[in-house]
Image 1 (spheres, helix red, strand yellow):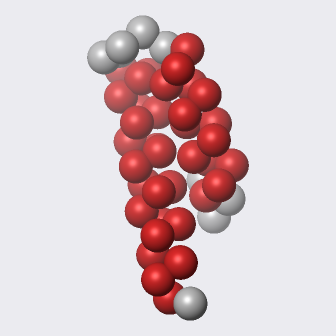
Image 2: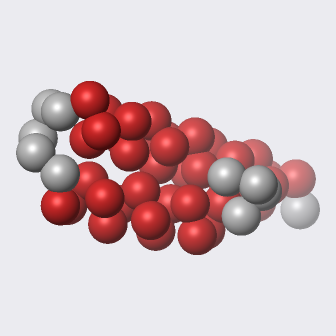
Length: 47
């Protein structure tokens, strides 16, 4: 993610939409999206 959380989230969501539901890559994309959302919320709460 390289601390580029908005881009990571956008890319993960695009990947999820185009991958077979439940596949290993789909799950990986969900993991990335979850982590990016978490980091974005953490950063937002620090302000």
